[in-house]
Length: 181
Image 1: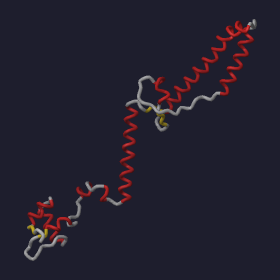
Image 2 (image 1 turned 180 degrees about the vertical axis):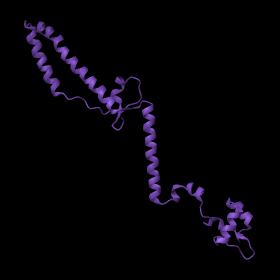
Image 3 (image 1 turned 135 degrees about the vertical axis):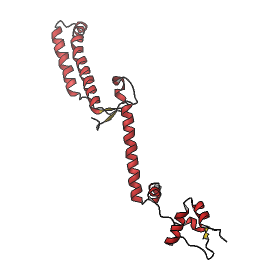
Image 4 (image 1 turned 90 degrees about the vertical axis):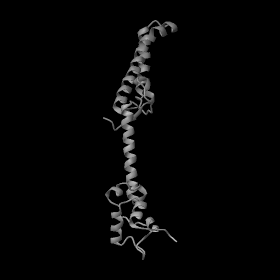
């Protein structure tokens, strides 16, 4: 035989106000026995309609599938946004325009280094090869260096980094984001 409770005991077990139990009795969602008591098995039924506060606290599984999927997608997007904001603040992510600027500067330094090397190396090569015309050696060497530099493309950054204070040291490890301004 199941346990039978009065309205006050039923409300205490359900964790609600006795007034809610009386309203449910009036609505017909709860039923009294012949002796006026409530069957404890009715506690497991959906006798209470959720109010605004309890609807807000319903777990995702209680919502329909589409709403649950939308809520999950929203939470994931917000988490990703917050993570990106954190990485920006901690200097783990830098703007693509900054990486492009630094890469361009480094590439110009490399090119300038090769161009000045030919002027530096021409007299040494001429002396080692026994050629008296240093200017001719410099022109030929400069011509070949320029041809090689023309065939080389400027590097495209594709980096993943960990935070570091020196941008030039970090450059090969940078995570580039194109959507930052």
